[in-house]
Image: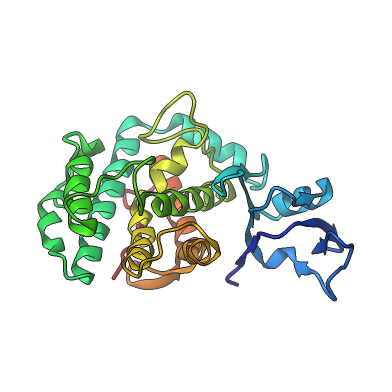
Length: 295
């Protein structure tokens, strides 16, 4: 069953009763019925006057619901993930720790290839000469040792948003929309990683002692163009502020259709499929990563 996300932006209290998430407004008024937690994939909390009970947090995390808390600027700031939600977690941790360097390099090679290919496909869908990126996603070397990802990115951004655009976290719009969309994607990727029994702190390429989720930064790469496609449409239509409509559109990126091996899957499901295939590569049982494609 495809689970859904809910976006909480008004002052309220969230509690749990009989497996239902109960949302009570500040006047104490309760809804006629709660929201089944088993139906949820993500809960985004975007109001500083929202309170949530500890039992509600425990039940959400126990059922592997990705809880994302935004800061006072409405940017995703906190992710809640369970420490133990997979019966094979110990085995998967050992698989990660014992994985060979060639296996990790192969995964990164396939991630970069898929990312650049999806960037190329998005440009072609927008009639922006995506074929210019073909030389960069063809024959990517192990571990992307010649940094085709970085070179392709400069071309991609100039084609997508114009020669004057510079991708920067602190840059002008639509950088703000990209930042928000990528943070939501990162949280969803971390949820999929934990759900698969992997440790998000052990990356295959990204590594930084101050980064607790390098594996999420690795695995989200081929999915970034899906977020870019939504940002492009929002920006093209003059919607460049982070408000309820734009946030909702970016959160819905988690439910975009993707293709893996010719079959269509929602993006949130495709994340789990990629994680599962990565486990097999790390264990030496396979050489092929299940990556998403735009078309």
